Amino acid sequence: MSTNMKVTLGVLAVALAVLIGVVVVNRDGTPGTTAASEALVRPDSHRLSTAADGKTTVVEFLDFECESCLAAYPGVEKLRAEYGDRITYVVRYFPIASHPNAYNAAHAAEAAARQGKFEPMYKKLFDNQNAWGHNPQSQADVFAGYAREIGLDMTRYNSDVASTEVANRVKADATDGENAGVQGTPTFFINGEQYTDSPTYDGLKTAIDASLTA
View 1 (cartoon, rainbow, N blue to C red):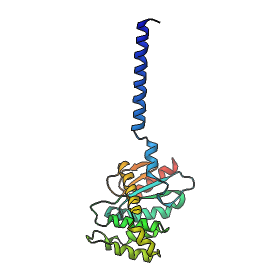
View 2: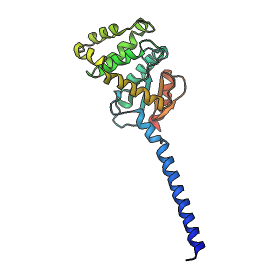
View 3: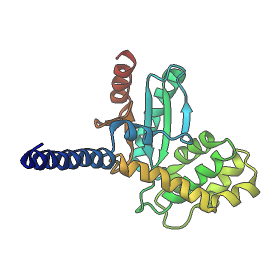
View 4: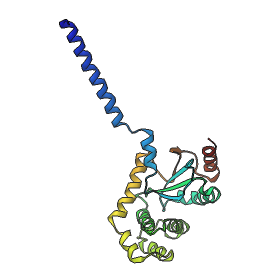
């Protein structure tokens, strides 16, 4: 083999190695759509319903103190009653820092979840948002009252609601939301695709029906 041929082959080998390296770096450094979808629903995410066929999954990132979330809430509840276990409905925390009790409310919901009572607390918080929302004083005592009303073990609730584990769980949801492009609440995803129209009953129903018949 000539010296020129050896040099040429060496250059080609280096170029190939560089190309492979670029492909590997790009593959590892750019999250795929599958990974993004998996981040929308974690194994410990709170499911208000679960579809046996797994065909349609609706994920809502919400803030219990958000007025827009409260406005969407009746339509969401109507949809949940209508579709039942034909859809999987997942709730994720996304408390807004400017809302004085958003984190307290999320922590209360998560503490309730640890006793199997996420949904009752979810409903308590939204059904009573006009009473406690946008109050600059801590509403932790109000939320403790809701905990008693739904029958929680208060010793365990008080421990959980103040725990680092609960705080980290809420933050983990918010981080997933940020990584998925959530910028405000409520934000909905249907089968991994962000729903960008107004979150009305009719709008969400149209999107859900389309996913069920796809």
